[in-house]
Image (cartoon, rainbow over all chains, first blue to last red):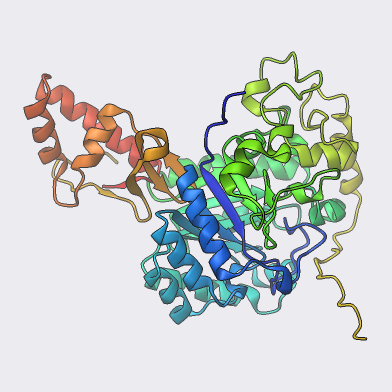
Length: 366
Length: 91
């Protein structure tokens, strides 16, 4: 077998700690504690190994990455390694001096998440009173530090009607780019699916809003928007294909083909404490299992789209069918495709109550 | 809105032209984006130094490549307009 092409991007999930409690958090349901996190020097080594392997872009994420006090040192490690660094943050732990320190350390870009355009709703969804106001202040600090800003708006039934206001917010905050990201339903979000799935009418209105805004704001604001799986006929090429261009490292050092993959059963994900990124990327069983097309079942195996969507998302296949090796049910050719319509129907009559993300309870002291 | 010949095009904030040694090519990296310029686009991007105007870039290319200046100017403007729409360039 020839060596796979090197990865382009690395997602460093520095910590699972976060002051927000979003009910669609993409972290695994089993969260890591601070004591299990990689230390500063280990992350520095991971960044150098990533750059040597061919990674160009580093995403510093979490949890809330600023929950790590050594964040400026980590950014400096990334800059020295020659990586383009992108901070994915909730913004609620960073004031102007801390933001400036990150810019001085060589940070390239900031992606700020917002939960809604309307303060009361945003604070309710994020589970942190006063969170939205802090985010607005943080966006000003990003501007003052001279860094480019992307606004990330996670959208769902309870905020999608305010998409025009979210677009206006992106302009007001000086963002050059807006990511309109539909919730993806595994982990925490799957638990809250009934409260979050949008209706088809909402979705169609949102798509029209984006089309109109892209035209009106051409050259001023770039809008990224993808139709969500539950209304798609073709699955997304999740991560650009398993083990093809992307790797994620968990707070405890586990290396994953996708940040949600830790929830998949029967995997022994390798750890940066035991092996190099190059070795893991090229040789580990976990990265090879769903790489390429030979693992694919029908209808993927005989499908002309198999090297375009790579069979879709393994985590979604597992979450909905119980088998990660199945065709993603988002595909209209999947024998499980009807499960998505069923979920949409069920959600249409459900309440909007959330199960918030929580850290596991500490074991009681002995 | 089209780009005027006297405009000085610049990389948008956060966009950087850099070598990609693992793949023997040049790329523009930006916020969760990656652009792989073709040979012509790379020539234009390399001339974008924050001082040269669109006109000056066209002059430079016209001196080095065997094509009518008007044709080069049209190509440069079309490419910059496309890169501006993608958020790579401000002009």
